[in-house]
Length: 310
Image (tube, rainbow, N blue to C red; front, side, top):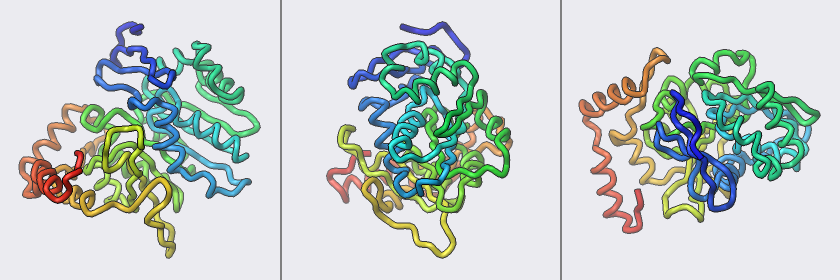
């Protein structure tokens, strides 16, 4: 099934190997999720690294879900929060209403969730918001660069999920300026979590004052050195641990990646640039740079690590 043509790109309905439902955007030419399936991806790349067990039972967690999409990241987190009996308040940023509208009418999809999550999907489709005894949520529809400005300035987030299409396809939401705007909205000790391992994104996060960690590879995915990035807003005089069950400190190869041309950021000073403009600006900056190329970085680590997979 393909949805009607739209300026945001045609959506192809996708049944994943785990039976879950997702989409492919034919404008960006990318799937919404990896081949392991959206639920497992949401849990492994976003929920588990959130380490919600660290929150007090009476804590009310505030979350920003950038590129809400089908809603798997937030839905899986809500299910986990229900087990922990922790209230959650979610702000979602999303430009495309179609995915939620489609899945909210799909009985197979809706019935795969708890009753709480089922009602949340129905409420989002109807009112773009939800509220119950366990929390609340609101979706802001439009360009995330503009919609984030509508969230009250005194609201700071415990967790930010950054899950747009890849940086080369949607650089507007990976620019150094947008990343800085996001990290400024974290509480002390708050975490920004993303699937991206791109040097440009990690370097921008570090320049924003974040401590960065590498999410350990997911067994079901192809052999890789990392499956995502966690950026932690430092607490005064408190050392951030280097390792956990789901993440680790960047290794020498990853640190060296941040010293290559690949680490040159995506720039969007006006907050209104198109993807073509942002990519062209970065390409020009890379051409002028004296940093080692990505090719040189890859070659060095292929020789040092025979099992290196870029």
